[in-house]
Image (cartoon, rainbow, N blue to C red):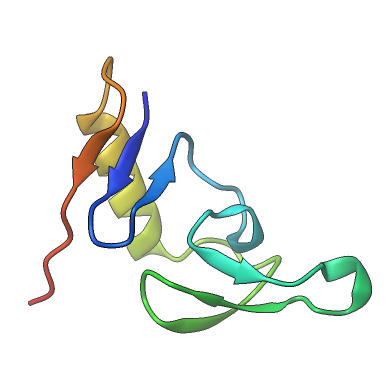
Length: 80
């Protein structure tokens, strides 16, 4: 049960509990004072311990529901 977002090639296997645990986040080591990072999906500045925003949770939940019982299903995101 995993899916990959097509245009970024980021693989999700579970819902991250915080932005620092998300594979789409680029963060330094928070133990060395670098708790600010960047979300590659939405081009936003994020803090390591922030809760995932509603739009992220919805996309990941839909992707995990679509990939139920399959591996490496691709989810294509389209910008309106």
